[in-house]
Image (cartoon, rainbow over all chains, first blue to last red; front, side, top):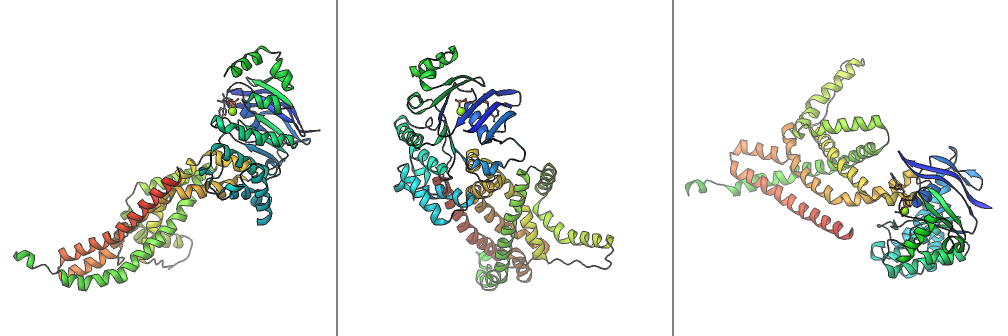
Length: 244
Length: 238
Ligand SMILES: Nc1ncnc2c1ncn2[C@@H]1O[C@H](COP(=O)(O)OP(=O)(O)OP(=O)(O)O)[C@@H](O)[C@H]1O
Ligand SMILES: [Mg+2]
């Protein structure tokens, strides 16, 4: 069954219509990779899924409940939809450990020891247990992004959203973040990932969608979308991306 | 030579300095600490009102800020000490409470004046600091399931405060100096104490020189401290 069903989603910023008609289901355990040119609305789409942006039309069903309904408890919902940002957004005034503990204690009301145990477990998973006492500014970008992943996972999300998690990183740091994400996908996490890393899309994605000008232009397995695109716009985009 | 030999610093130091470092100092310290703390609280309330979504509240606060920034602190002190009690009595009379007498001590009026004036200026510092915190901090917090209120009070405001601390330091030094304005509304702080002493002894040069030195001795270390804090926050925010 689909965790999220997105139906005819629309989003405008004033006059500018960024998402025009987006319909897609995100199934449990699925890794969905979203590709597309700059400005095509990929970030906006992800941000609509946890309501950082308020859609202007359509429906988003979470286990069948419309999250755009006025009675829907958005704050409670967001906990189940983890998000990692291009620029990490770690809390600079907290240590790595505190970053991962903080929302657990505040939002889920976990005890000190529960939160700490969970944080240590996740930091170990992303390979940063020995950095627990360090402040984020003293970490490399790749390390910061891995902490951000651990921080999001600490809320036990059902879905993880990644918005270009590696595009602010030096090339040599991209691999460590992708490998954490790859492990996550192998563990069965449901993920929606916006990325320009075609290798990741090919190897990890169950499904790839190509977005352009607010529409989903192509939707299929990595094999179908990346190797045999039907649409000319997809072909164009891929040839440009693969050149670099 | 003759003129210089008339100077009598020894007497002035002997008589005036204990007065300055006694009652006058305790009044300056008390007024500064109370005025500053109340000012901070007031500044926070104004800043939160300005960034709230309540249009009317925002307008009222902006108007109030213009009022305070458009008038001198000295005039505000005089107004609070001499006029506000009369206004309160007037209102009390209008409400039917005849013969109500409102008394406000000069020190109370001084502290309120300093708090309101500095609070107004510091509210803009706080507001700017809040607005300068990266939007990503709020977004990451919301994405983790914090309420907008929690994101503001647990994540944004603590960072805004720590980035404003050096500026607050400067305001503290300024406030120490501005306590001298309270002399005009009869608060026996440094200036009024010195003035009273010179009118008895005519040791004008000596007394006011001592007064200036006392201010310097208090303010220079405070300035150095606030500059130190400024450098430290600048380094740690890199
Ligand atoms: N808050 C906003 N207000 C106004 N316009 C916005 C806002 N956010 C995004 N846009 C516009 O919406 C369009 C789509 O933006 P979006 O960030 O979703 O694209 P994207 O596919 O993620 O691009 P990129 O690959 O560059 O990240 C752009 O034209 C952008 O300028
Ligand atoms: Mg984007």
